[in-house]
Image 1 (cartoon, rainbow, N blue to C red):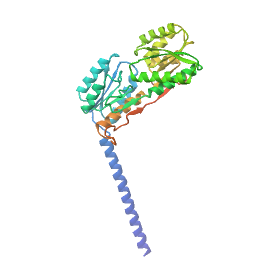
Image 2 (image 1 turned 180 degrees about the vertical axis):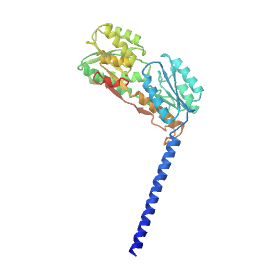
Image 3 (image 1 turned 45 degrees about the horizontal axis):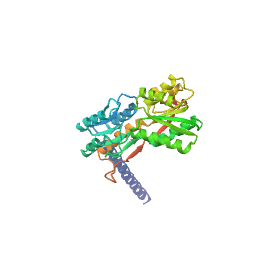
Image 4 (image 1 turned 90 degrees about the vertical axis):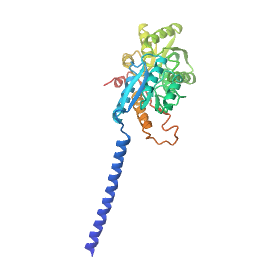
Length: 333
């Protein structure tokens, strides 16, 4: 009797083990099937990144992130944009891209409003659009992926105050028509005004994202404000232009420069001490997650608790401060 009971218990145990393994295998197979079916596209599915000044180094990490996401998702990507800092050219390029009916478009705009009609037209036609780096907040674009630019300006102000021992005159060279640069400038100004009573922002100049023009307006600042102690450039070409003007006048020991981004020219000037610091953005993350967002929108994967906002409207990709101490780690390896 005991022997029979023992055999019976063994059979029950084996049956329970079989059922358990069957459930695990079924769940794994379902997960694999979902992953294969839901997170893989095909090479005929094309997503496009649209920017301006397409030849500058700044866009390279963002495009690399876009391409890395495309490889993971098994889709195709293209890179288009205005060759110059030209709003009408970017509008024309975006309209040409829309006419080809791509699977989705990631856009960075030099103006927060001018592209809205074209963006809205694409979304109304069923083409998903997300913004990255520079937003068009009143458009129908689903999301913005980029730096909290006001906070970046705050960080730049604190770093400038540290460099100047909380005392001195500072200038700003920016692109005043572009929302992300407006926010960086505002964060910088507000922080200096509210937290550093012995510091003053004495001038704000338009460098138009151009090295030569930024170099020229730096010369103007030094002429108009001979006691200026620091300059904050809200983008990389401007920072290099400021650095060139400072070197031309042999004022490396007198004027502190804080720039933005990590192109090679900026990193070289940090390494030799011309630029004191720069703020590195998560540009690879902007490109990578832009494509992920577009793919999820195109394939209707996301949980749409609110059908009008299936994804977060804003994703902060972060900033870090680069100085001589850590500049080596920002060069390509």
